[in-house]
Length: 507
Image (cartoon, rainbow, N blue to C red):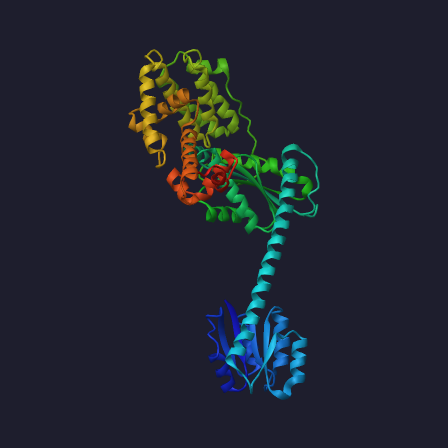
């Protein structure tokens, strides 16, 4: 919709011009009619104009002056002049300054006037298309440039390569570096799969480049990103609010200011260190680096642990863990060290007692994913419980487990297009969620959610081959609630977009 103003000192002419066109039908909004140029300019302060229809000779401010003043403000405005026979010299001046056309008051015909209006609208539309294309080209070039800098900066931060990124920042410009970690990533992966987690970060990165005109956003892995922006007050808090507005997922932000480009790698290390503080301060999400972020406590190993764990007494072990983790929290032990210690505790308790060594390694990988000290303690207790369960069942005949898996697979194949979860399937076959997870991986050599995703992709392939359903309908029928995620996942899995796959395989 384009905005129109009519300016003429004769009320009858203004009325005639207004009445001779169905403005809305022509894609125009009539802002008003005015008796002179001065009044029209005042109205333009309130709302921009796209098409100006003005008489040439008027009191206070004539049409040519109005046209020139308007074009200073809005260079793309289209101007139609209204004149008398003896105004030709003024008309010629107006056309020279860019007027689209003119109409003569004595011979004003509605159809001729309408054609001039349509000519003006056509010009406006063509210019808007050109502007949009130029804007898109400029945006694309800018994004490509930022992507190049992104790769350079990533190599600088991770590998220490000193490539120049001064095309974005002056070498002495201060920058804020932020290390951002997804909270609850383990739950997301369990419910949706690793590719969904990656998809979420892709969406955040895309939105960042759209909303932040200055800055670089780097994906480090499936759960972490680094953002570097020109330093400004409360940059981490602003980014945190921006993330909350963009997604329901929450993030930890560790931040540090780099005085210049040459300090980026050091600041990256510092802000990554700062983000670890959430391990002990789970109620906070934004952490500035301080030099006190140093951990001096050392983990217990081998024989040091045995005195607390061997001979195995569950109550004694649980009491030890409860007290020990309180001390570790007070000492602010380096999180990775404490996770390694938890793995040592588990292996000291069950190495040689559980036949499946790979199972113990899987259990340790679960401990490594703990996000807080409380989470680590609960996970360690659960892994001990699971290992006890496995030990108790080692001597039982395997056919019972086979039957459970067969029953579970039957249920999965009936419900995989619904919101099927590990917990739902475990409840259906009447075993614990954790034990079902162990059994499933042991027998299928695949995580539960990856198995479900494979079934959904297979279903989508069949629908694309054998039906004319739209892509969003295929996504829904296959168990994917988000068509955009489905399209990205399908392409990553098959190498083709859903549309291309259909073209290649449609019967």
